[in-house]
Image (cartoon, one colour):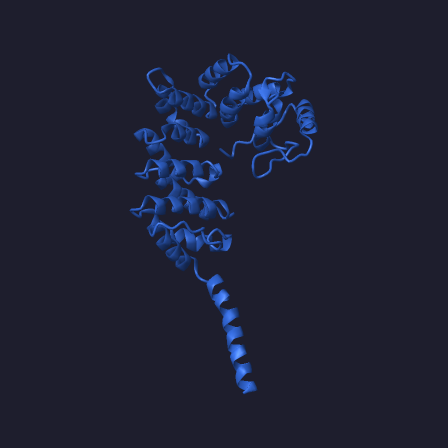
Length: 311
């Protein structure tokens, strides 16, 4: 009797140990099949933890295309999210380019929301993650004036598709939506077009320094990676004028705009003395000291280099 009970306990223990291992060791293809089946049922499961792992990237990227052309909008949306997570999480150039290639196709999704999502995800990749074929697809999006055209224009500018300059230039003129005109100008500015950056800076210099300018206009100045635009931001950061408001909505008080500007400059200046956390805030417990440090760094490093590999 005792031996029989011991045998059963051993069997139960084996099952308890083995089943989690089987589940954890399940191939990504099988996990994706289960996951998307639940999405089709209207559920909202979390993306399986194994999917974004770098060691699974190749098999996941190979399995996703069949779901990318699913009839359900939500299924395709989840595919684009996975492409961003998987592609952005690996170092191999070929795999990153594969993910980007699929996301570029996502820009043509019949659902406008999915097309916009794909465009947003593409901005998280490096310039060299775009293969010649992907760049040609972006050229095609520009020529067809597809959905979210302002973002398409800025993507073309980021990739410095200078052969599109004269295609884009007419969109800077009156008769186009203001958002398109501005996107065309900053896109051309990213391509180092002199007339475009002159127009951008002429407009910006007319604006009073305040939160609207810092939060809505300065990100586009950063995007241009233009030396004059960045220099203008550095000058604004050096000012002690309290033209902006603190982030505390309950106790708003005037503060120098430099606190926000120092965060905006962090990702695009080589050797910058401050780092950002995942939320985009400066890693510091003393913002006054951090701003002082950033200001002094620019005074000492007038030959700073602007990074252009990111959007």
